[in-house]
Length: 90
Image 1 (cartoon, one colour):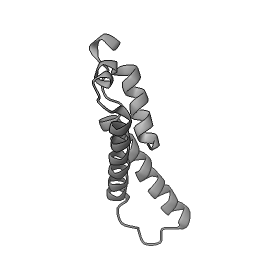
Image 2: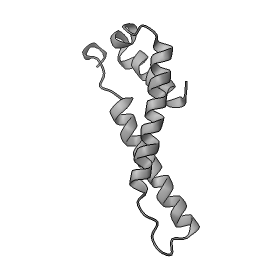
Image 3: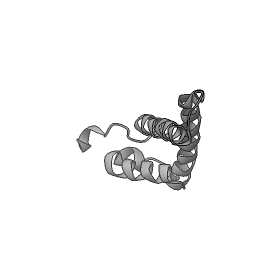
Image 4: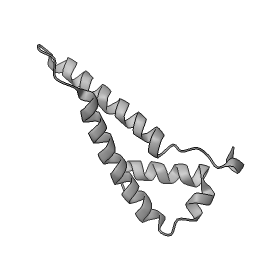
């Protein structure tokens, strides 16, 4: 299980215990979810990177790529991992 799957599992255990308890095989579920999240982050980061501007230096390119990666990661984690808590967990 990658770090995204582990993060989702921890979040569900703490904030969605009823849904977590209903999972037949949590390890498999979160391992697959983690892989899906990782792939989605990579795809979205590539979309956000855009075209390399003329004259872009190494540090500017590194900053652009890191920013797109962090933005994609934040978006996907909010959509797929950091889900709303169950009503009795608020």
